Image 1 (spheres, rainbow, N blue to C red):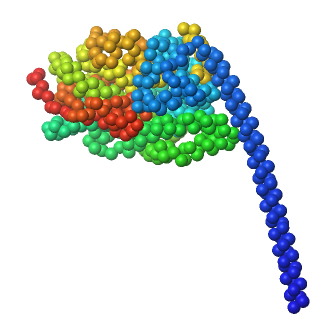
Image 2 (image 1 turned 90 degrees about the vertical axis):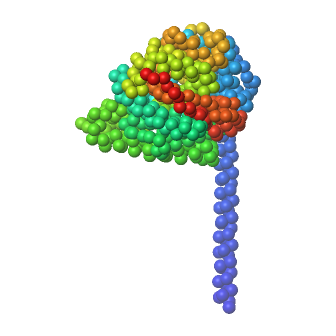
Image 3 (image 1 turned 180 degrees about the vertical axis):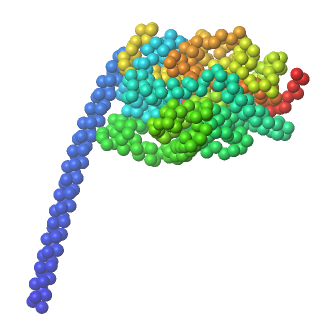
Length: 580
């Protein structure tokens, strides 16, 4: 009993000692945690304060340099034009056009005033556009990820492709990636290619389009023509750019097209809703702050739009790799004339090692889809909206086609569809581009301080935007700018790209400009020779543009807050064409 008692005492003593040690360790751990937390809090306050002071200093310099530049007309505040933009999101491009009306150069703040990277210089003066797109173009490029939330997110989607690649000497690679893509791509846009390969493909796809409208026309059913135009351009570029025969017009599933549209809309919705928070995150200390910090990562993780965006990108990655692998595996690769084949042939994979990574070629594919599909499909949608809401203009185009006698059996050519041969059709197309440019606003970032021809001082890292939509509706340039007048372009004189920057200008002018015009004329001529179009009842009043996209597609939601309907419902009617 005595031994048992002593053993129990020793056990209790040991347990008490262990408990005391654990308590001391917990106390030490808590004390250490408090000290670390206090140290990080001090570091965080100091880091954030330093960031804020540096940002304020840089913002002050920018404000001083832009003191003579008039402020665009909006209720300015600590968050710049963001509150006003949210209120006017449903009419975003008209809001900007009204805010800058009558001002060749003006300024806007696209975020909190302490951020030196949110200032935007809005330009409507052709001489200034010429300066930064041509005369001093090497000083203006796409912003890097570290300074621009929109472009950082866009590069998750478009990678190293030509639309987001930085060019000029300030680019990380000196602009070689951008120049390489542009040089190789230029090989497909030749006159011979227009009049042979492209003419055959556009004509065949347009004939297929016409045949598919016969059933709805006989039944008097409305057709979503915007969806059909996106299918038409997708089918066309899949063959011209990637050597794949597709028939999404006929109902064939296109995982790529569906995922692409989802990625586009999810990207823009995410950016609009998260931008203010993302800009605030830039001030937080490491590791939470910055556009690539834990705070921004948390925003991406919890945001449903970004999750949808990433899911769509996974599908695009899989489909792009399938297209690229198929091209590499094609035994007839050396004879192929499509755009992707030109890129792969440029590295001579038949006789040499593969130098273009799968990721890089995937980015090439993604960028040329938005270039060749979305922009032309948007233009055609708005063109047929104009024709359906202006039956007199539609009749004049059809009469011109009948009078000229454009044959449906012969291949169209650039000459047979030229402004000289079909001036009214050309006028309708250019009025469409004036009123509804496929890319309504575009811009660059200044690499270094500069001075515009009018004496305006441009601070380095300022965003310089040319207002394509606003310029097309400027009453000082176009009489009755909101009225459709194809006669403005008759007789046709090619507009200066600096006065009409629908296709950009200078060294960065759109390579596919002539292809887009040719494609639009081919399908428009075929459709209008065979059909007339009118709006479905109750639809005309709903039509507006989709504000949450880079390109100007049609939205018919009829709602200022929700933009989830993107249809152009037209009723095709078979024409009784005069005998040839």
